[in-house]
Image (cartoon, rainbow, N blue to C red; front, side):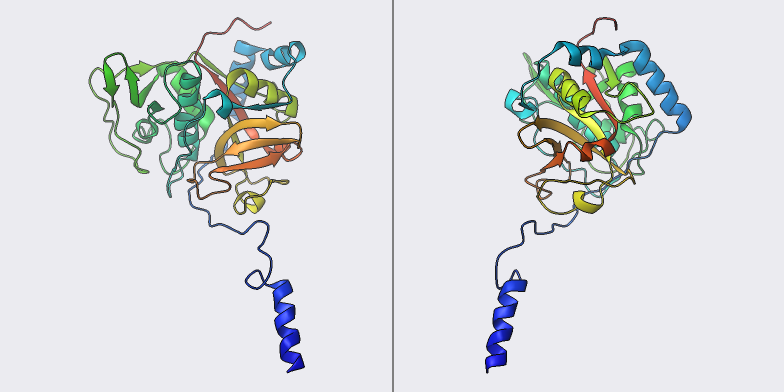
Length: 297
């Protein structure tokens, strides 16, 4: 009898079912990935273009601004609801179109952050020769194409009413279904946050770009701490396979806020914090601008 009581007491201390809940109960990964790294040649071309068009713009802004101790794009009404890319390797496309592209237009005042204004992820899915559909790709190539050619909105509202110019996201590729007369939305510019291919973006560069241009597109390793739990991510791996958004920073606890597109079942309703130190593992971090920018210094 004494042995039985001791066993019950022991289980109460070691098992969450009997005792205290786990701090970060694991959650299942509920979405696809799909990041494909740029070839060295493509990376060199895109970084050269960013440097040519923007020079040390982020560094110049950093040196001449006093940033607040905390900044959250959601507080400014720039961030759309958390999306869901499905079991499809379209993260590079979903994060870029539904995320940074759409939110750049919302930030500029062309829509509201309630999902009534969305640049179409499916428009990109239906262009398999340009991108990669569910087979993966790289958001920098998507955003560069969008700046050069424009993009089609899934839905937007103007003085004449509600426009639905492209079918909703389906997590699969199809034929181009652009409507005759659909409005083409053309961004002004985009650029890498880091001015060098030899190093990642620094904490100060990321904060400066976020404060000036709104949500950023980032690529990372979606394994390890990222895949499960709700707590602050303190470490990221080096097997880059996923693209998402970065929408906030907070100096009080030294963290950035990541927004995923694996539905609100991931993390804390689709969000998780990432320490400044761990952010050194983020790659291909870029910003987007709707408005034309002055030439670089």
